[in-house]
Image (cartoon, rainbow, N blue to C red; front, side):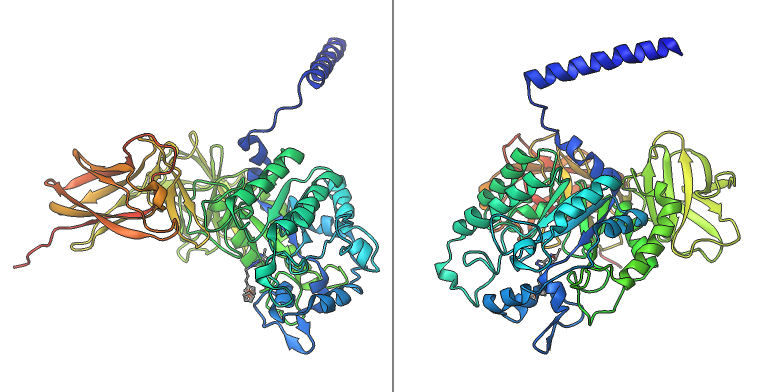
Length: 586
Ligand code: H79
């Protein structure tokens, strides 16, 4: 006992000395991108809170209503409410029932690990005590409290992470901000004045006055990449550990930030090679609307969470409280049910990563040497089929009954087992499948119909090197980030018909990338080609490269990659297609 104490004291002294010398010598090293995002990759599930003066209008202005299913926080813009009148309304905005401890407790019991509050939405009203603009909840309204400070304090106590939403480009209150062209003349705006007077100083305040901010969530990407970079630099300087979401940048250019956001309520088809998060609503609006009672069910939310995590993403689920700041009952009821499920099953969520298997009966997440099989739809014959798994199976059991071992068998490459009888979770029943070593999955083999071209798209591609499956804000998915011959995309295909195939490639490329050479090869055949510009980086066009002759049926790998090293991406590749030879039927 004693030696341990003595040793640990010596160790503590050594650590203290080391820390002291570090403090004296150099500032702590900025985290690497991987270190910065580690918590986010682990935590998966966050709460979004949309609260602002619009919440008090609850979707109605002078008898006019925001249609159910559309964004009630847009009411000022939607009805072109003059700044003077909106400001007057905001004078009496008083979310006196806002209780940060209750909000944090709700997030925590639901299994959410981070909470993001709207500190300024597009209406320009700051939801914290700003010294940059009087138009804030502390100075402008009778509330006279700082919700951000209260939330920061409660998050800290409960061990949740705090994030802030800040609309950095849009501002319908400031004469030079984006969006308000009903009060202000668009042609007379000086956008940089808004940036220097309000947007940047407020971001600075938020990142300086509330302790560590884990993520800053910008919206409606900045007008130019240069302006976006100024915000990135500002955040990095003030809080190097703070994550920046992808919407910091202009949607018309390549995406910036530490991770990407899908469009609002968006869901990718799967198979992305980057970190992402999707913000989603519980009904059809972010800000409160008294008209919208179309709530998603607990089953929907649980299965959505699992689908998102199965595809490698994070789920940022929104609550829009009414103007008094209270917890809205209908949302709380849904979150409680989600929390009940998370209490029991969260091992299958936290710290997992995307699963290469896409089961028809539900979802699938991976952690170490385990697959978590999420069964949403209980198969009528009581047999669960897992296809594509190449690893040896060590054990299968219900997550909630680890002693109940189930036996598996294999049939034509499919792993299957009988599901236990008895009650199961109507939202999602989780089974653990342990493998020998990390689960391996066979890449799909693409087959062909007699006269149907091979369509090799991003979903079925295997990427290597820097090549990555990504998406742009138009919801288009592509392969990007490749800059040299080692960065490849490839597909396995089973050719049953021999002859000459026409090779077509569909991609987008801005003018600057024109002329870069790339190679498509299959077996010992290959074609070399040069990139043609498509106008804009989000405009995809199809180009015919030539013919490739395949004179023997069988399995092949088709690979495409840049021919030489370059300082820009090759292209945004959407698909490669192989058009089969025309067969004469007698
Ligand atoms: O804060 C939430 C939204 O207010 C914000 N993003 C999430 C997280 C957002 N910013 N822009 N958009 C969403 C695009 C929305 C456009 C629309 Fe509309 C708002 C469609 C309907 C209302 C503009 C106004 C177009 C039609 C009316």
